[in-house]
Length: 274
Image (cartoon, rainbow, N blue to C red; front, side, top):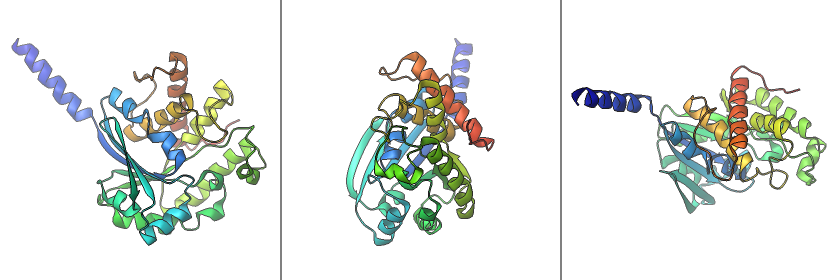
C-alpha cells in the first residue's frame, strides 16, 4: 500500500511538472475564430496541458484597423475567451482592455486574409506590435504570427482578384510576404496554419472551406486547432486522443499528421510545396 501511494505521488508530481498552463491571445478576425475558439482547448487538455485562450475579434479586421482601434481606444471588439473549456463572449471591449485582461504568454498577430500576401499592407505592423507590447502585463510575452491560408480554388469573390484567382499564387505570396516582412518587426515564430491547410488539400482535396475562404466547421477547424496545439505546447499532436464526434478517425488522423508536418516544415524553413 505504501509503495502504491509513493508511486501515485510520484506520478502526480511528474504530471504537474510536465503539464503546461499557457495563456494565448489572438488579435485577429474570423480566421483566428476558425483556428482557436473550438477544439484547441480540448486537444491541449487531452495531452495534459491547459490553455486560456483569448480572441480579440472583429470580422475581416486588418493590421491597420487594429492599429487605429488601439490608438483610438475604440470599444469595437468582441472578446471571445475560452477558460476551462467554456467559451465566453463579451462585447464592446477595447483592445487595450483585452491585452491587459490576462498576463498573456503568447500574443499572435495576423493580417486580414485578402491582404495577407500584399507587403504594402503591412506598413504599420511594427508600430502596432510596439503599441501592443507597451500594454502587455507579462514582460516575457512572446509575439508570434498566425499564417493564414489561401482561398479555395473555386472561390469567385473579388477579394481573390489580387491573386489572379489562383490558390497557389496566393499561398506563395503569403509565404514570401511573411519571410520578407516579419524579420523587420522582430517576429521570429510563425504558426503555420496555412501550410497545414495546403497539405490537407493535397491529401483530401479542396474541401477544407465552408464558403471559399473560412474553414469548414469540422475538418478545417480541427486541422487548424491541431496546428496551434503542437505549436503552443511543443508536443507532437499526432496521436492525440481528442477527436470530436463529427470527425472520423481517419479524418482526425490526417489533420494531426499534416499539422505535425506543417510545424516541422516551418521549423526547418520549408514553406514551398510542390
